[in-house]
Length: 346
Image 1 (cartoon, one colour):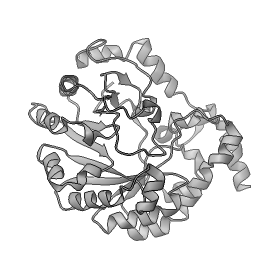
Image 2 (cartoon, one colour):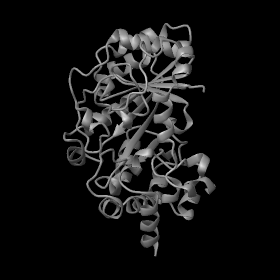
Image 3 (cartoon, one colour):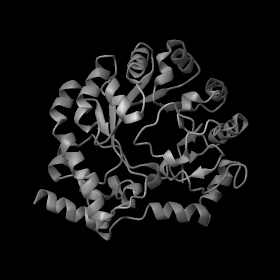
């Protein structure tokens, strides 16, 4: 097993309250922040493992008070690691702050767009961050930094996605990624009742109804890993050729994630699951290689890698799909979505 990236949750603190947040249950505790000495130990581990990327996430990672300091620490490591950050971009409205991040080694930034205008932002995330995000995009466009604007597609913003993309493009953004909302809550409704209420097929059809307009704005877009291939029609998959991201690290096992207490977690969605701890179960990459063989680690990863149906084994898309994000199967079965899709298309 060879990993090439590490994601670190710097803090659970956040300056927004996104309706689609996967980590609502973690709360937004102001004090839920990684200790700086612990963070340095994670960076040391990444250097020992000769990883290529370290990704800072949250919460909102730019609220971590020692972000610049850890970037300087990474920059001085003998093994070159490329730090990246996933942010809502609010703090990036400050050009000096943007410059400081880049000067100290940030190699890539992902800004999660929240809406097409102030009203939509308020509706979706609880406050008006629209102009701040636009300013952040302008700042990054003026600097020598690779950045992407991402967008979680929900029932509230799916029909205005082209307006959101157009506004970002008009201010200097060039590339965009989309993720269909992944519900991390255990719903009271199951199977057909859940699907009728949340209707992923309608979401997909709405997206495709706007592709021509989207392509007229930008050709540089892709869909992040969420729904499995069987959610799409063959015609839709043909249109999406070259536009679908590779499976996540749960399936490929090319990456790891640490929470604020240096616990390994299987993925950000499963933030309550602990499958090992740096400094307790392992302290080096060699020790990590032994940890991944232990039942506490292996059992959880194998459970998440379990295919939703035996039919997946015969699917031509198996190696690029693996059944989609494991989280989506919390509220409905493979059989339920198959029947739902058949009824949908008659």
